[in-house]
Length: 120
Image 1 (cartoon, rainbow, N blue to C red):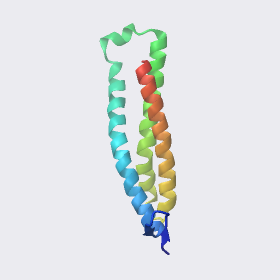
Image 2 (cartoon, rainbow, N blue to C red):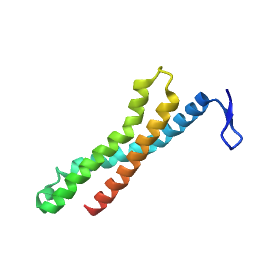
Image 3 (cartoon, one colour):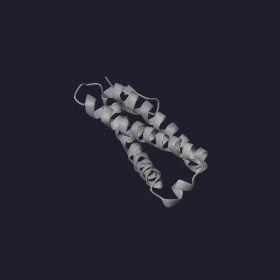
Image 4 (cartoon, rainbow, N blue to C red):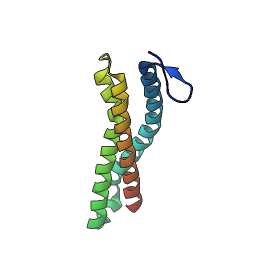
């Protein structure tokens, strides 16, 4: 059964899910790389000589930033893992919906991580 999505595109629900999944993967590739680099730098901070000079408040901000960073990495890697677990179960439309939600959570966490990094 073919449907039109309001923009003149005729595609089945499966075709739409395939297209949306491909688009989501492209978006995730960009975000994941940046988040992983940021997270790597955050993890390296603790090995710097000046880390010992940080105040307790700054250390708390650092720990919060690392936790936010790890949650961001998990949320942005999650959709690919979720898809891999459900491959072949004919659930792609539902997978795309949940993967999109996880991506939005990841982007909100990325915003919080970046704000916390700037505060640090």
